[in-house]
Image (cartoon, rainbow, N blue to C red; front, side, top):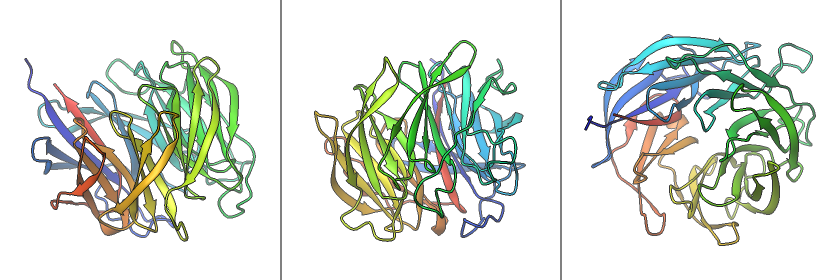
Length: 368
């Protein structure tokens, strides 16, 4: 049997940007990760890319994708890299324009034939190309072909400073791969698109409204049940949804704060634990991680919050075995590692953190 290796990739801001406190990332940092003792060993740096602030990988571990978030550009970039299965090293394949500014998120559809990106958009709606969501076909080598489909969102929300226009922040395929769903912070909506998994074409299917001023940022589908969960950046709340796989529509079940006191807080990442019993949310400002229990009714109920181990937890990811959680504390230049209790979902700081400048994205990859 081929040897299995686990690698850890950390992206971050390496170009001064008005809304980042620093730009200390070297590019994409590459580490070997030992699942047994949860330690990371530096392997190298992938340069030649600007502000790789979000990373995602193909499920077979062959390819890594990185978005470039540069607010001065009308079009961001998504870059493709082949992963060396023995060393974890990255080999540049190609990149494509994302047809919109401040590219914030990327994911693969369930068949891994396409990469979808969400553009937060910092340019006026009158400036081209102004596309909120874009779909790229994957080549046989993992590189990206030109755009297969795209769509623009219109509207605004009540927060004049943050909701002046559409700000798409996340795009995910539904569990059955029939829909692409986009959370849009600027218009307080989840927007669903019918998705053609053969061609990459998308067609708007409907939308789900959040309470005004929520600012939906990221969301996650339950791994087994017809539920989904969204984190609202502006309101510091978690929304629990029922999901209808036939129509691609969501039904809002509950909205609850991520903290007892959310003053001065803005949420970032949200993820379910591997078995779907516990939900985790990062709080920037409070600099903590909230842990929720998932009830039989699908509703997330806040249990506790623990310090994130640094300042401004922007992103986090579970190791492939689910036993470790890595948290990118953006403004303290480090990634904090937590042990995850499988029985109750609690987190314990492991005490051997990773020093890396301005981390904003974490991606674990297992190959072999």
